[in-house]
Image (cartoon, rainbow, N blue to C red):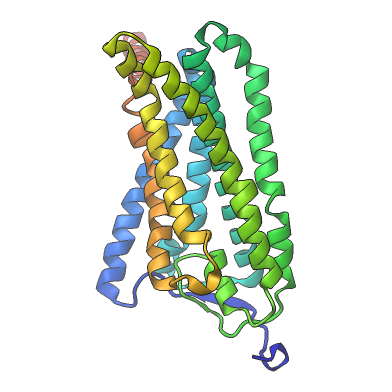
Length: 321
């Protein structure tokens, strides 16, 4: 199609997951419950890590970063489903759509890098425990986290620039529940070959393969060390410290590979948005449900906070009487 014969829209229409009103209501309730659980669980982790000095360790420092990322990603991707059902407005401006794509891709890249840093943290804890607090000092942890955030956003600046170069679209209806890169590129009538190649190559090499390789190398040494432990209880304890991290890593990488690391022409948008829903709703919930709230240190921190609240309340009642 000739780009000169297509007018540039000023806004996009987000079609959502379904046109049926009953199904829309059920999806809204499900997404609302998942989002509130994600928000509540990750905010709880953040507050506990900030308030409880027992959790001022490298592991929980990175978990706090992961919680911030999970809250941000789920808010960016799920807010349109929630707000459009309440207000009835399912439109989004072109600028807002481009910024949403950039923010989502950047936060996802940061999350993969943070998971790689967490893998390195587990490697030091298991393979070099005597020097753990020297190698993973507060300064090193802050530096690692800062590099993850900076590189994650810098790596996606060319993608944002490429989106601003797209001047026309065949339609303004996005077959998705938020502004995602693949359905937007599907609508473009401009030449997006360079942008697609950059996303595929940079996404595969810089944003996906590099953190995956770092995580994989860390776990080669971790598994080798675990297998050398003589006692079965020691091997089990060491493995359990890594199992939750591996679960989050597997789910996130699997959903991202299915969604993005394929040529745009071969992607079925209808099925792809359900993988996106899993990535946007289920994966951010894994951190509080699997990674942290079942951890004995987090449970102990919750009990300490509850005892402190009860104690303060009792003292306040005694002073009033």
